[in-house]
Image (cartoon, rainbow, N blue to C red; front, side, top):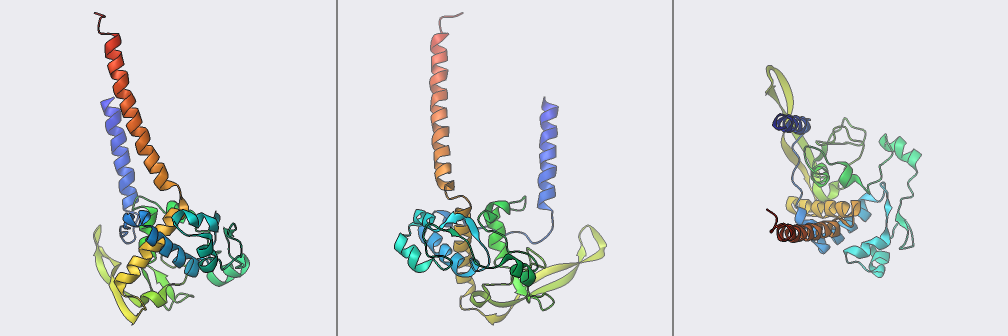
Length: 255
């Protein structure tokens, strides 16, 4: 049994190592405290509607679900409804799928569950989105004029470039750590070409709000599920204690 357990631990370690060494830049950690901040979620929803919902759908979420993050029907109508006139409608767009594929090379995916589907051994889905949305850079060889460190040769343009400004990525040739005779093209930081309307700190904060909203959108009941899970565990521990003491009482006279 000990040998079997040791083998399982070894296999899991190898699998984790394989995921952690899939290449690409390390993912920045998403500030998870934003997930319980209603102001952050509301700001993220505003950014999502203004910048993401032009091309991407969130067809599994209805606008009236935004009441769960503190918005009223009137606020939703005044600030969120650009693609429809009914609060009960889903977050769909009028962009033609065929035209989108011609323009971007692929149909823009639905973003409802992207915060969950992008999780990997390198980090969580929010970690991926938080890093991806902050690592666009100018690349004149690409059809859109933009590229991305996390998703090389991405078809999506940098829709938030006015907020962040234009940046160029710097790369250097370094020796391959696994084979010193080979050279690798390694990232060596960004160079700011033009300023954005936000400072780097403000931009990162707004991206954190956007990712917080997308994470909430992927599972609106996540916080409630976690609280319920804690309650269930506490109940089971209490029941275990009662069962243990009952068992001791039933068998105390049995020799």
